[in-house]
Length: 340
Image (cartoon, rainbow, N blue to C red):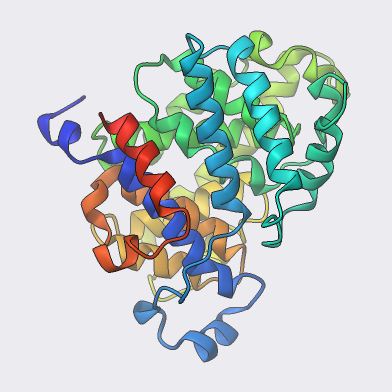
């Protein structure tokens, strides 16, 4: 339900800025274990935003998705015919960009190199990959106003599928966009996991033919329904683990020990959600908890920031942090466009 507060909190700006802040906070801690992070950064609840506040490929590719969505909407309704071309162009541009040197994922690199050729995008997709690169960049699709549930789900899965073709990558990206959408529209964090589980059950056997074409035929599954179900079932199992973790999670314990390290899509979703749901009214604490983990710290903090910003809005982030983030001007421009 949309409330007056929902309309004024600037959820899109808050989510995009929070995503980038989490990414920058987790950039120096990725690939380190918790003791090494504490030795480097001091107490995790006091972690400072790096100077300069550089982001990784997570924010770079989020901006690529956001630009593609904006281009598609400029051409008409959000549909596979309007979105596929801009997504492909933005991903190839990112692949060739001189600042694409922030430890990008191998799946994205290989797929984007293949997209830079005259072949159907389904042939570029890495059908066995469910890395978190599919859902760390999907937040813009959960934030864009004026689209329906089928458009949101189809677009979220399409942007994932251009690089990561595993059905769990698609389902996790869909769930991530749905979570961002729900929080931006005023959903309470307390009931969020239950709503995501219901959404997963409702969509478990649905294959988005219009958006995905014949992608499922590359997988070896017998039917498109079997392909989709395989991904949703892995996400449902991960959400069950998250439910269990939330009952007695200790905020001082590395969240990765409870819901996974986040290198794969369903774990990135649930561990980032765990960090956010442990501190739903303390956005900086949620980011710091996600950045101080043994797993994919920048992607976990990136997603935790997207959730916290969608929930609390632009006011969640200290001005002295938001003013220093790399690509801040473009993030604010896109956020303002969709908040309007």
